[in-house]
Length: 446
Image 1 (cartoon, helix red, strand yellow):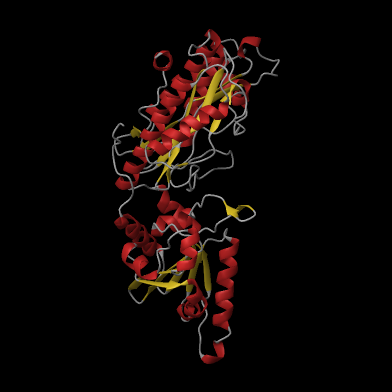
Image 2: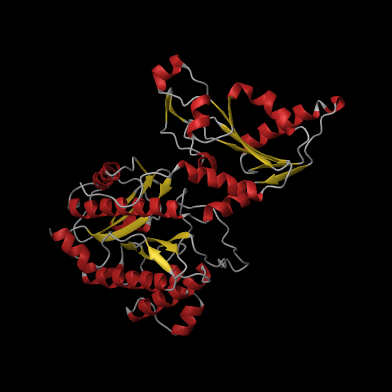
């Protein structure tokens, strides 16, 4: 088995640093609340595989459900307090071991840890005298909890309790922190990309006419797990032929046919961090002339856009490059007709390039972070070192589109890489997923 570069998981010091960075954004005499995810029932008494709330994980590294993190900044001190499920031998026999409060303090470098049953009493005490309360306003359950805590504190006003006067949405703060990745986080995402690249290689080598899309999906998931990514970062897309023109196609249940392309959008999740890679290749191992022409146009566009990435540029500027490159190519292929300048100005390519050029990437596959979108829906935020993003141009020619020549119909192509913005420019993390026509055909011929 090949050795993977980088690190398998983040050191606990990274999560401590994340908390320190959030503390730095808090006002003095304030408190912040973050909750863990809950288990979700799949059917009767079985649950879906647990996925931790990403903000909670970012600040703790703790991977049990139902927990709560409380951050208190007061009088020059900063305190991290965890409320979590208690040790319970009977529960653990049936469902698995819990960390418990003693080990949680030691392992996750927290100041104090209590059981969930102690929340109500202690948190109402913490709130007494606090001025500002931070929590994510889009978390309805947490909002209900916070208001319940505030009501309990307010009920003690006659006894001298002082209730917080300001409620602040924590989401913009933590979203911006998460947008900038540390060296350790980038190393982890580099590894997630590498193992995902191995999965895409395996998919190309295992693809055959007559197999079903879900069989190739299984090959991908096998390779993820083989190298340490037990879960996919998102629902894997394995779309043969015209299915590629359905952007979020996840049925993955149709037979692979000769002379059609297979679009695979798949990335592994490693210690919570996502890769997001798309490759498109011929099911029989050889591109037709029409497929080759469209594929090369998408690939050229992707590479041209990536070469322009550096601090100070933006998705808005990259979209201009993609728009021009795709429009010129579609005009040269005879898919478009008319005046080039007018076609570019009207963004005519959006008829066939129907989604965004890219997005932030991190703990979520469509990661948090402000794009600074203006009234024209342009993403103006300038790139800075440490940001990680995807670049994913595509062309989608539905089978029922009678406006185009028959040879183009039913072709859907997307090529997607994961990019780190560096001080010098960029680093492409997606280094081992074959993408040129020659690389793909050579690998599939083996």
